[in-house]
Image 1 (cartoon, rainbow, N blue to C red):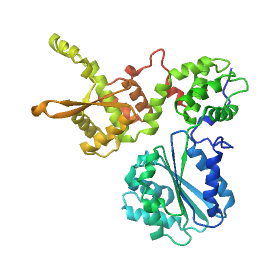
Image 2 (image 1 turned 60 degrees about the horizontal axis):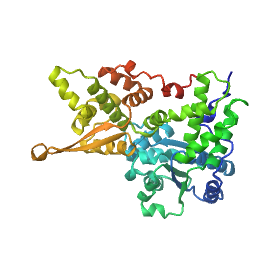
Image 3 (image 1 turned 30 degrees about the horizontal axis):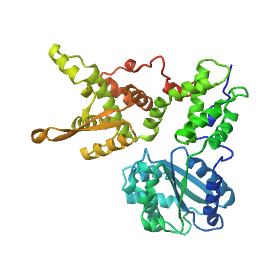
Image 4 (image 1 turned 120 degrees about the vertical axis):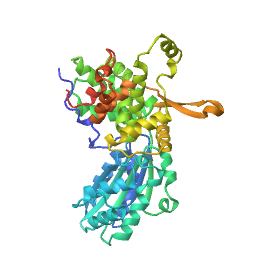
Length: 431
C-alpha cells in the first residue's frame, strides 16, 4: 500500500501556501517593506535565529507579497554562504549569475563594477539573499561592502536590497554601528516553535504528503512533542515525520505508526550528523572531519608487528584514534588540492577544528611533555567514524577517491542491522 502521495513538502525548496505560526514576524516584515512599496529604496534586512525557525519561509513569503505590489520586477539571487565563504567568492558567484561575460579571475573591484552595471535597470529591483551568513564570518558581512559598491557605481535607477540570514544571533553584534543605525537597515529574530505550532506545521505538510489513511492519529502529535522538547525546529520535526514515513514504507506498512516514530527517533543521531556534515560544515571542515575519521579507522585496524608492540597497543588503546595538530595539518596539506581547496596556515586549521568542537563533532586533549617535549593538542571524533565517512561519500565522489587512496573500503562502512541507511533515506529513489 502506498502511504505517500508526494515527498515535495519535505524538500528545502518547498514553499507552503500559507505561513504558519509566524504572524508577528510577517506583520513586522510588512511594516518594514511598506516604505519600499510606497516608492522608497528597498530595505536591507538581517534575520537571525535558530535553525528551523522559519527564516527562509518568511523571506520567500514577503518577497512574493511585495512583488505583487510594486511596479518593478523583483529579481531574487540567493547565495549560500556555507559554500561561498568570503566576499570575493560571493562577488565571483554574483557575477556568474548576473553578468553575461566570464569574470572569473578578476579583481574584487572589477567584479563590483560589473555586478552593479548589470543591476542598472529601471525595470528590475534586485534582492540578494545571503543564507547562513556565519559561513563568511564576522569580518566579511556583505551589507556595507555591497551598499558602498552600489553607491559608487550605481545610478538613480539602480535598486538593490540585501537580506541575510544567520543561525547565530550574536552575528548581529558584529555589524558596524554605522550600518545598524541606517534607516533602511532592519533586524528581526525568529524564535523556536512550541508543540502546538509544530503540530500545525506538520499537519499542513502531511495533508499534502500522505494519503488520507497514511498516518495513525498520534503520529503528528508525537513528532511535535519530541522536537518541541528538544529544539523547536520545524526542519527537525519534518525530518522526523519523513523518516518515520520512510521506515513504514520500507516495511511495506499500511500506516505510519508511533512505533515507526520511536524507531525514527533512535535514528535521529545519524540523521542529525548527516545533516550537519552535508549542510552545516564548509568544505574545509568537511575535509578535516573525513581526515580524522580515516585516521581513526586506520589506527584502530592497523596490525601489530609483534607481541611486544601488541602489548604496547593494548595499553594505549585510548590514544589509537587521536590525531595531532601537526599530523592533521600535513594530511590536509597533502589532500586539499584534490578537493579544489587552498592550503591554509596551521593556525587556521586550529580555528576550523574549533568550529567542529563547537558543533560537538570533535574533542581536543592538551598534552604537556615538559620542557623537553612542550605542549601539543590531539583530536578525536565524538561520533562513529563510519557515520562521518558515509556522510562524506554521499556529499561528493571526491571523498570516495580519498578513501580508496588510503585503502579504506566502503564495504567496511556497511550498515549494521539496527541502523537506518540515511543516504538511501535522503535519496530520490523512493517511494
